[in-house]
Image (cartoon, rainbow, N blue to C red):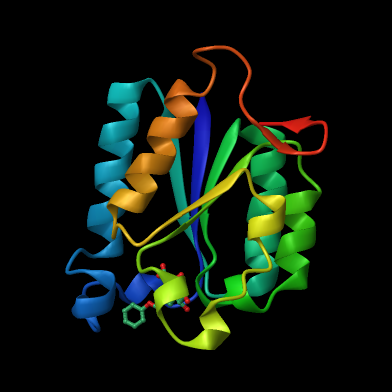
Length: 156
Ligand code: CA2
């Protein structure tokens, strides 16, 4: 199973500033770790990062054609981007929204996610392990029968 891990704006700066909020790990470290973890779970993990909204839309569309799952940390675009929401809604591939921090415990403008409503679920507040938990879900989601009903008539 091929999974694309997509990181949005400023996440290329991880490990350089605000370690109290986002952790000490660099993006390169997280990506390496996820590829290794994925291999152990039978997942092929492709990692991408962009600071540009349109490029993120392109990546989501490509993942919809080439991958069986997407782990998406859209950064600040989480709270602003209808274009990214439409891109996620437009693919059949399940997308898990992840965040390093817990946006619900931060400033009010971070409490709104344009993405949550079109994602399979959201994992936040666990640092880099938020991504690892998302990979675990993809690796295990076909076990144990059909998933829960997430909206009327819609299963994940
Ligand atoms: O907690 C998360 O993962 C966020 O998606 C991170 C975004 C933020 O806008 C979201 O509300 C929550 C910001 C990422 C900025 O990353 C930086 C990393 C190091 C230095 C500066 C920014």
